[in-house]
Length: 304
Image 1: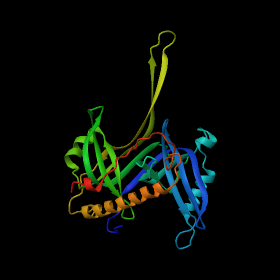
Image 2: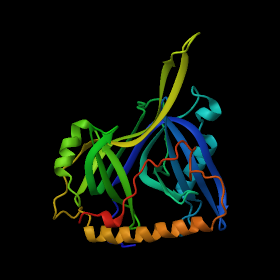
Image 3: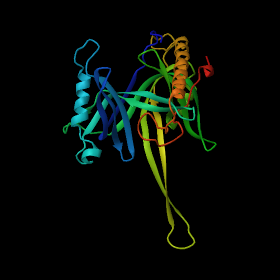
């Protein structure tokens, strides 16, 4: 991977009730590791899952304080699942990150889901103000901007697609939805190839709708439908960086990273083919939809 492509600013802040703990302490290659995931509930029907991974020792052999902190979370934090809503700990994550969970299903198609990760979790003390929320702020290299279309009609919102450089010189494609107040600005100013910074809300909720069906006799039959809404909702952003700014992502380096990404995905696909067939499951969380919430971006589609 190219080391010249700088890592994007990428911050996730989530505050809510500690909902469920699925962390485990395992040994990998002779090293103790805490890995797994935990859930945070920010509102009824809205839960966000974080992945964690930390080794007991750093590369230099010294103690890793992150591992120690996560062990406290694993062993001492009270969750809704284990202690009930009234006793569950209120937690705050201020150093989370947006990522992408990718895998190939049994049908040979690439599945992609927005993924949150962190290694830092804190309890909200009784003296602190508790403000449940799920927010992000991130820099990205713009791929495209288009109107959002639902049921063959424009919604007034905009779809912003872009690439987010990671710490190792790789990039991931992410898709955002821009609210109506900012859609026109984004469509007019966020041109393909520009570097921008946006912020907004992480949406991951279940919407329940109840309707009644008429019947020939008796009481109307109640029908319940559940709709899962997953999106990165942009509520604000800044002007694109000036072309001579040191913060601008170099299109040439983005292309190199995307070419290397294609190689990575091809290897991932080949590895899947070699595995014995089994029931398809997401890499984390519960399976709620067969349709990916992300769109695949191809290096050949780049407009620059």
